[in-house]
Amino acid sequence: MSNTSIPARGIRPSSPLTTTPRPGPGLTEDEESRLAINAVGRLRAVGCHVDCDEPFDTDARPAAYPTLGASVSHLAERLREATDTAEAAAILTELTAPHDGILAGFEETLGALAEFFDGLGDASDPYTARRLRYLADEYVRVIHSDLAHTRERLADRHAPHPGRRACTEQVPDHEPERSAVCACPPPPRALPAPAPPPIGATHLRR
Image (cartoon, rainbow, N blue to C red; front, top):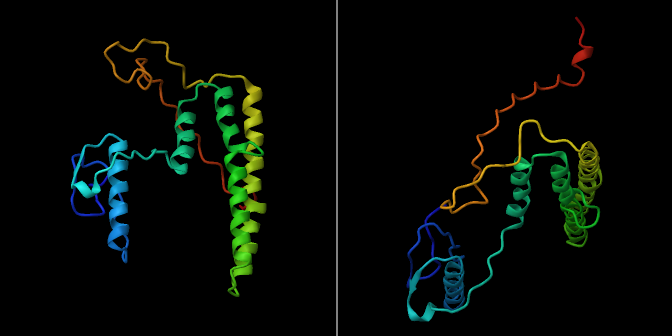
């Protein structure tokens, strides 16, 4: 991560690993002070020691939540660690659940954005709204349907992954990251499958 950028004078963070936003142009002195006070609280909330002038000192500790993108990316980490088809199917459920899954939410977001463009007023806005609805109807729904079918196939297989296995070894007691470190030797890496031929390649003339 980059070095810390603090949005006001008078703040001296001890950690170089936390990034906070610089103030945007046109902020008043009061707005910049509020932004600085919030930055102090957020830095301290994640464990950084921050020295600051008295006007910026605060006891507030805003809650720190992972971004939506980081939460979705965590599914990829879980899939890389999955050891059987049931585990992979359970992870895919978070993508494909019909009402509160990630893809359902994405489709709903595109629809809401289309509604926003419907009343925006420029001549090109109706086209943009139609395009967004087309993406939701033709692409997101296809991805959703395919992944739901994939999830069902995985759930029905009840099979371990041949290249992965659950950890059965003990991590030493002095190891601070017991839940994140496996003492088992890594399984042999599987060779990647060859790419399928391009569509229509079998119909080329000799």
